[in-house]
Length: 298
Image (cartoon, rainbow, N blue to C red; front, side):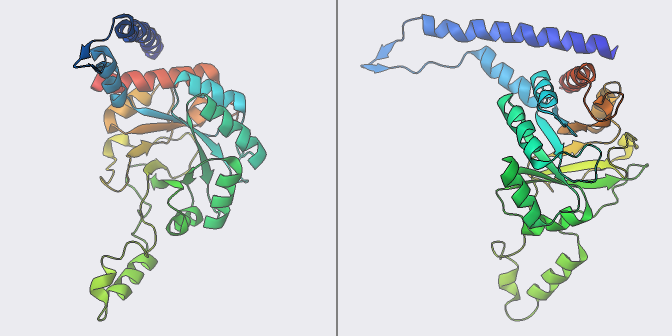
């Protein structure tokens, strides 16, 4: 069962940590060897390299819609890699900037990366909010926020959200597909100086995104779509892609097996009965099942 899998994964994690502590400490207990008067470098223990390779295979986890520092800390300690905060004021999980800063600080203190979620804000508003909260990751979830990509500075790492219909078909234009951008490109390529425009990436609008996130058409609804039919464009983001939309502790392993995403995103699937605060038991189970599922595929 998923619960048994979560418990086994947790036990294995603690066993690996205890073994690693023993193996890492061993070299420092031995006297170092001098070669020609120069101290020889101590090689990393094989178990450490193996553990690092194992961690790289694990699917990353983003817990979104976090509203309190306590929930951020609990999720990060459970193993979440990203903590998402809704900074769009019309969401039921929205939090003001001062609270978002507390959540972001808690996430960073526990080893996770905080991400601000925006829907209809301009580039200037997104940058100002990120600076006030102390974050450098912005999730662009709505048309206006996505349109702001070209004006965002590169210091803001962009998580670009596209929507998938019930059949798994992506229905949102990808970065650079917008008609205005295509028309601008055609204009710049015309005329005597067109050859130069083709390689002028410095002065042109930003097109680079760090992550592509695929969600359902109605974000935060908890509704799933056909993951088996999902075709995610390769190479359109620097770090990989994130699967979202109706995930919970019970189905995340199947979703990872079907899509093999770089990361998974959950909000409603780990919420308590009120739908806003996080249920720590669900968060623990979701993270454990996601991590163990990716290891089983390796």
